[in-house]
Amino acid sequence: MDSQIIISERNRPFWQIPVAALFLTATFVILCAFILQFFIYNETITYLARFIFYTVYLLPFGLGFCTQKRIHIDIKNSRFKPTIEIGNFKFGKWKTIRNYEYVSVFYDPSKNESDQFEVNLWYDRNKHFELYSRNNFEESMRIAYNMSEELKIDLLDATIKNDYTWIDKEELKQKANEQTS
Image (cartoon, rainbow, N blue to C red; front, side, top):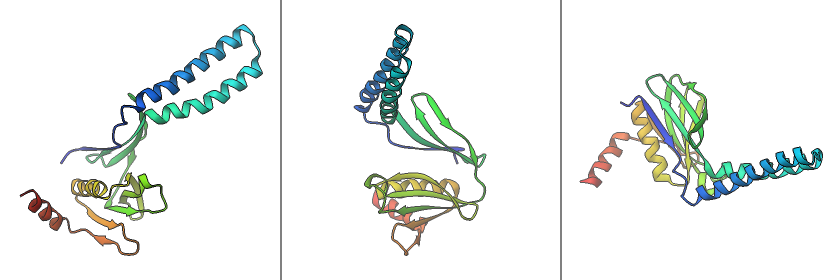
């Protein structure tokens, strides 16, 4: 058993890197222009308002195109850390998990199409942590299955409203073996 699991979003598409660079560069240029204008003309209020306006709108776009979410799970020490990563910078904090209960796959039609299937780790009776969210049922189920196997806990299929089903993982393994044979 590995002592650490990392669940990650897919890598950003290549085209998003130049878009992020464009927004972040524009933000940097505006910041530099503000500093120069402040020291040369000292029209503080006007330039401060423009600076804030442009920065508030450009910076989130740039960051949105270059951030990535990951969840680090340290099985050995029974803890997890959701992170948001921007390049080599990682922001997140370890949280302790006690008493793993089960992993579930849940369907939420009210969410946008890209995040309708959620994989949740349930612990301490009624607490849960969202591990993964996508629109692909097979991928969500695969992640849930792998997580339940690593933690040696049960797997619940909660994709059909009011018809939750505990997955027989042994039967699932047999089907997978038959398909590969």
